[in-house]
Length: 120
Image 1 (cartoon, one colour):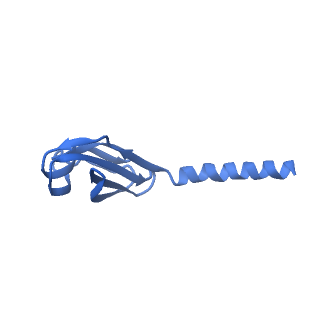
Image 2: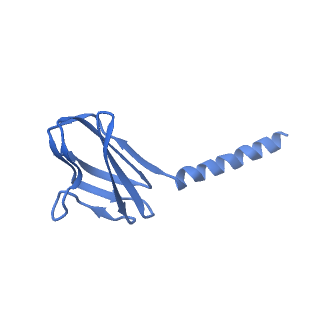
Image 3: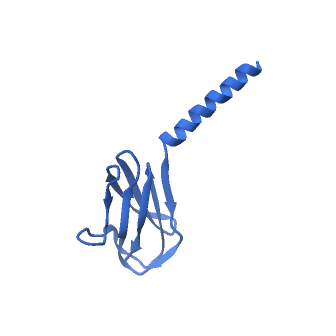
């Protein structure tokens, strides 16, 4: 009985160890910040897919608790973009928004390096 239980525990540990790496996820929630009214953009930095697979990064913009917009970026492994620098424009998240307190959430499969922010 003890041998069976320990074998099951070892097998479960192996399976769970595999699933956490196979389904790795990137998540980031910004602190609250205040913006003036108008167009809200994401960029002025770099976004890199640091994983081994083609993955999606989702940007969700909230005004208070209300979801304002969702944008998705898909990049190949080790591919990067520089929105808001050089010839690549910033990513437009929303237009015609009122002044107020906003937050954004980044989420995606795989591994990401994001050094960009929201501006207006």
